[in-house]
Length: 168
Image 1 (tube, helix red, strand yellow):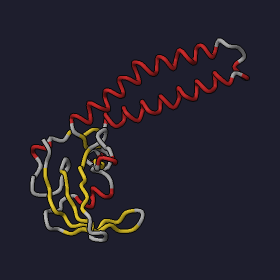
Image 2: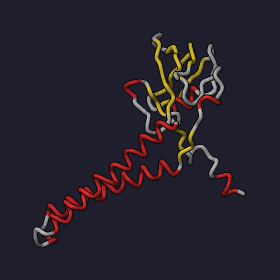
Image 3: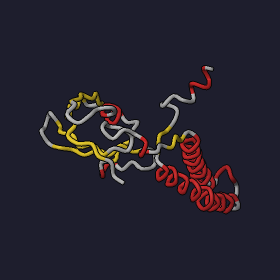
């Protein structure tokens, strides 16, 4: 029974929308179908250039191939742990996955907008933050008018929830 419950642990699953899942899947397909075969050709060409013990091109190509394989493995892992979320079934009156949250920074008085997204959709410049991040976790479950203090690496951030909306 313990093993089964472990699979339900949110720290082991990665919440994402179908859009995020499809984006990661497309990147994985490109890496496996285009980049890895090209890298294998580079390794083979470098191998044919002579003594492997002193062949810097060969060793560089093998290292690049290893890094590419590590990225492929990471993407496969994300997809295997994906928990697809249907945001239409989540509450609309509190901060949840997929919400756009307008907050007032209580320390500086300005407003900020955060969109809580899953893996594959993060874009920090556009305010799209991972739902698993400390900031997003500190906002989760809050309602309009709630105030919260969120510990972050540089101290504590204090916010008041001004608006919660959901983009279609």
